[in-house]
Image (cartoon, one colour):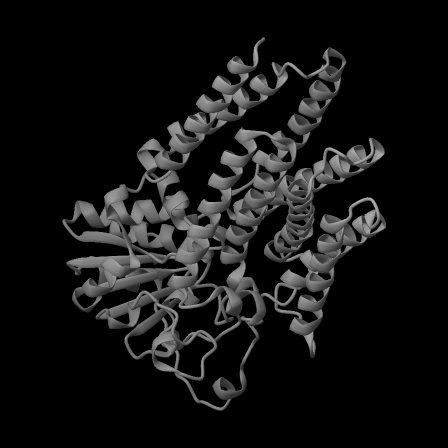
Length: 468
């Protein structure tokens, strides 16, 4: 096949990747987006196999890699929605590892042949590819471990004196080694393994001081790093599709990170180096706070007399797999002519769009999913705010307490509703490790229990089934 055919395949593949991103903007076109992305990747692989320089004997290695990837990838797709964040982090880890390994292979291949094909620009791109690829690999593994709450990887920040100085020093040494490699790759090629080792180590050290509350932002940043490593790989290998696809991946991850940092009123520096999420309990312990509780029957009776109910979902709903029971509550309320809206915080759950995916699975109408900035003006007119599994994203301390570590983070102002019903297993703090002042508000009634069971009981009472 001629090279123009390959370039045409790459061009169409790039267009399909762009459409995939575009169609991801709405649930109605999300399935089309997935199919577009799959078609784009398949076309990219076919185009590569048709490349004039590819030797026929290499096809067996390509087929073997495809089989191994399928064997690993299919089981990874069978995960509950609660595990999607760590599943996403693993995808970034594999992407970073692939970029790093290709960079290592290309470096030693070129130097085995004399290194004449690697100019300074190509060497710079290769160093960036290896540095970003390997730090994305270990960083993503650490993020997945924190999200999975593995015993040997604490979800809380791990900090020590001079941590940022150590981290930045390691990165500085790695960059310095890269500069020497660019100046004279043949003379300083013994420094290349140092770059690899430092990149792997930096990925670990970059993530351990970051608390679980910041993992959604970290995941999107790692997505950006993986994309940038693919861009660098594209420049090294002279592959235009890698450059464009990596740029799409990197820029979309960066934009998403910016949106999420804005949603938390945080900067990148604060997320990466602020050790956010440290448990602070001293002030709370000194106060005498009153908790008011209610039963699912009480909650149902309050809601059936409301005009507007706003449901604020969070990670607790995801853990309990309560979205379908929440849909039953929604159906019973709307049958009574009660308006129901869902207040969606940008960082609710453990990854961007987590709540949207869960509610879409339960066929909640998309028009009833309202973003934070749009729902907050309606909260003073809200009769009942049902907080189901959400914690930090409705904590008034973010607005009212300058001493709180989450102060300044925009929240859904559930405390402005006339009555707040908070469904929670216990009074334990949320993922950020911060006590929620909302639970002690005089308008708040705690409905203790598993979110799925509580929502099911509420729906049952709303339907007129009073049996216990």
